[in-house]
Length: 411
Image (cartoon, rainbow, N blue to C red; front, side):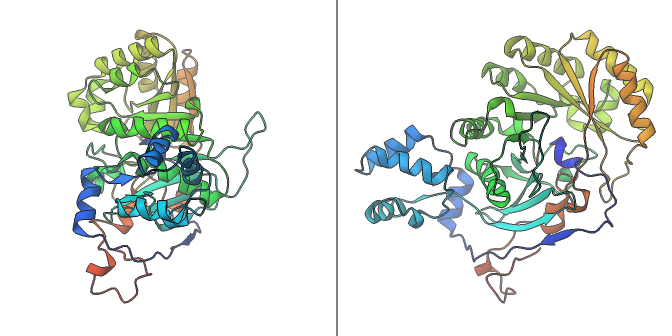
């Protein structure tokens, strides 16, 4: 959740290049909508090659047709079954007649920041909007090893029920969990837009991943095995949900766990993160220690710096003491607050950020300050979605005010 909230660092008045993408009419029938919300729709995206091979054989096709399906879904990124040109027409017809669909959604709106960061609003089948961010867009960025990086920041829920006090997503309310294909398709949409493969995925978009852990783990598997993104190139973020860190540890993933801490003590954390009342800081730290012992993967702590609230040197010292108390192997990622409309919080001055970081480093805590990106693309978590949708978008067929089916409807 944390990454989208703080991608940006320049004033909103800064120039922005945005484009609203036209989309075809996508009226959803009541039975179809019920299937979507119940999660029992027959969707191809998210299935493994083995599952697709079995599906092909169930339809009386040769096993290799499943391998073709896999290639069309994840390499060619085909969006409609009838565009499976490599497959027999009869097989395509049979899939459609049996209620199968690919599970790709249209892009409702896209905003591109001056630094190349792009944010997409994807319109789901039930007309909800979900955000995903690509960093960077159209500008090759080489890491220290000379390879090109493209990070996709994906959402796990439509909105978020935890309502952290500084987060725009929580202010926009909560609708539902995303299904696995709705998470996977965010990465494919980024790859298509950038015309480059995604190298890194962070589950830091809208929502709390641990409240949708089943779908997140299924999407993680698909992104690793089918989209071919290494586990070590993925990060799962959480603000802390009781018993879920233990559950995640049992899967022994090689991905990074990022815990949104935001405060060095329980009292202050409850003020910033209301859900912290049900998950005391000591319990979180114990679970993080156990996670490290079970997976041998370092835990990263996200710490949003809020001016005059949690950014004093004294807070840094208290945070260092807390981390040392629970052992080593931790990393702190400092995130200067990204201002959002209606928030009482402010971004700290650079001097305060550097002093906080120095206080941690002097106490042998590994620390980094997140590079802020794309503020002019409304890249704070939930910010763009809140601009476009306070309630579900109407299907075009249900909207008497819509003169053209290909014009995005803004509520």
